[in-house]
Image (cartoon, rainbow, N blue to C red; front, top):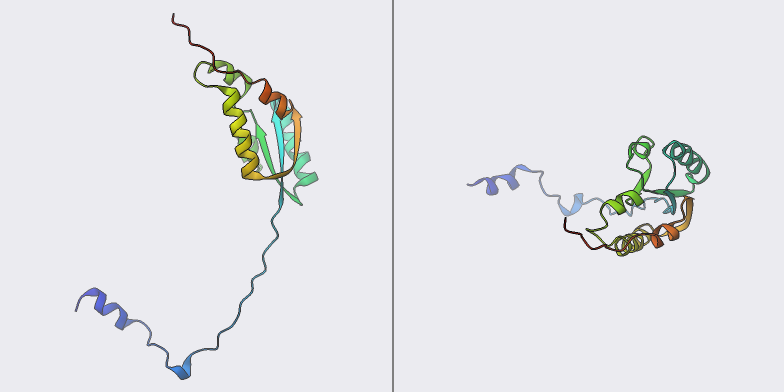
Length: 146
């Protein structure tokens, strides 16, 4: 007898029709989904980010899920507070890599994806407005050979 023939014999004995427990219906309470707010922090000074996170969390955190959209590479400010965040490359990063990517197309598509992903009920902007940030994104520039 192989291992597969032996295992079923070692388990509990099947219930007889007299021992079958009555079926019960279990209903579990679920929590309603929280609506989402996106807080953009585009071009905000690093020292102000902590205060903005604290203020928005106090104001909206109990009734809404807050997603911070930042162009800052200091992700620890968000991680230390267990805050949800998304990143968009800063204007400086865009200028440094303007020859490799069409930023206006990339950022427009990324914004649409973020809106679809989070489906926010509100977008609150600190620093530069998201529409102005997207409009200012450079198109791909031609490479110059040196």
